[in-house]
Length: 145
Image (tube, rainbow, N blue to C red; front, side):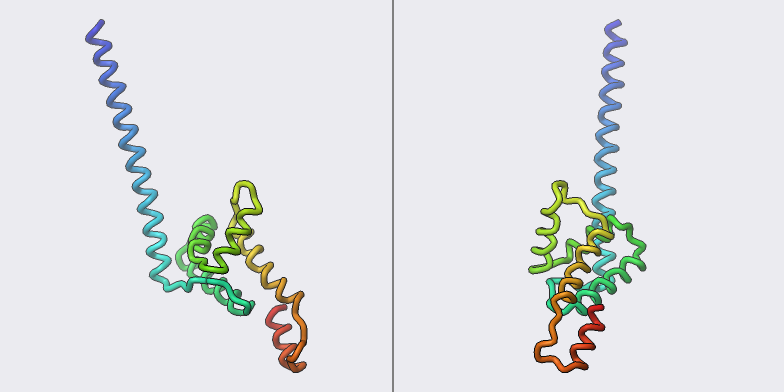
């Protein structure tokens, strides 16, 4: 009976050791995948985004970033992770304030784009002719539309 208990304990210990080893290996693979994803993204020469008062620049940055994601076949989760990691200065501060509007801070890729594009819409509604010629005003209006 004592021998059987000792064997049972040995089996249980072996199972625990194997479980720990598998979990450790899975975490390593996950970390390696994230590193590879980031390395692949950087190899595509993406631009960092620090914010701009020019809505055309913001739109161009987002379109270029999405082109890279298309080539890399990123998931929406990866897109959000990579994009928000590459925001700097004003853009990073803006995103942190947007995240703070939700208790869980969780957003989808489409929600990020909606928030990002809402900044462009705000520029559109605030557009005034001021010292612009009619042609310049129309061009700016068309870019923002």
